[in-house]
Length: 222
Length: 148
Image 1 (cartoon, rainbow over the protein chains, first blue to last red):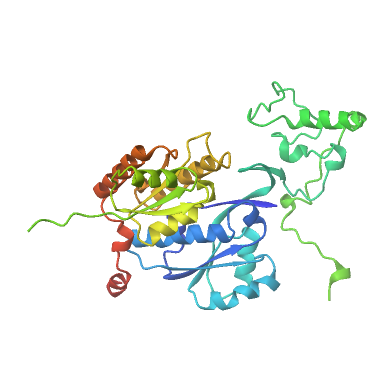
Image 2 (image 1 turned 30 degrees about the vertical axis):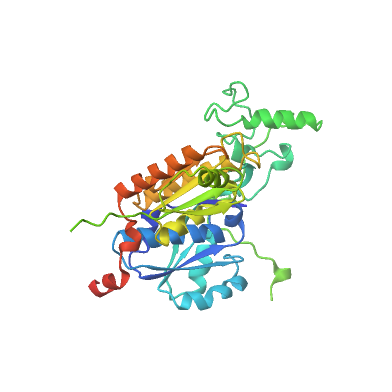
């Protein structure tokens, strides 16, 4: 899922300083699961914004709504009525959700209320960790399902770097060495021979370095 | 004329298994505590969410007290520990919006601690009395609108 975290309240207040009536719009998908922009967070942040505005003697109305998904035009219609009644939208969706809203509701200012961080998973209660950088050409099959690009601080395809200590990464000792994990995993599944292959430099063109990415599926077009 | 003393309104979320029972015991023991608290019984403080505290302040509570079981003594094992983390998170959020975080407090009280409960409530009321009324309820939006 896409993992995000909320901006702080003073920053949110300054983002909407030009407006008097704002719709705080949550998203029921990834950001609900990572506890950043679901219905509950909409309620908490709306209360905080209303109180912070009052304490600064600012007239600010904050309406609340959470829709199923912000990154899909079909679901955006659920918010059309509410958006019409407000001056601006403060989205608690990921960056894709914010931009989908801005493209659909062209005459309305749309702002991001979250900092979209990464594609990751819940590692333990309250801890999310990055697992995928969306590099565009997946190599997980070669590394026992552990991504060296995302999880190795040096993005090494032919590791390890020899800097790890006690199976910890030398760049960030709080994190395990990805190459230690890859070795253990490949040993477990009996594929250690994969490490003998020298991997050529990765093609980065399918990643964001190659510019904006789009995928076209002719079989699904109308 | 005697100046009017500010009487704070405190919302007290009390766990059914401990603090609520200790308030009951305080009654049986004829122990007095200030009438400023509005006790809300909850099945466990772990049931409480950040928005409960935020809504209480937004609706004009001068202070919020969360009273759960002693650490290690929660009926649901660790509900009170979850509550403490949520209270701490909310206190930081209150600081972000420039509202004194001392207005929100969590305490651990067992069902037998009637006197400590009464003392805690008295202390909380005095703390909030010193802080003054919740500034949120004092702001008059219509007055603001006529100024802008």
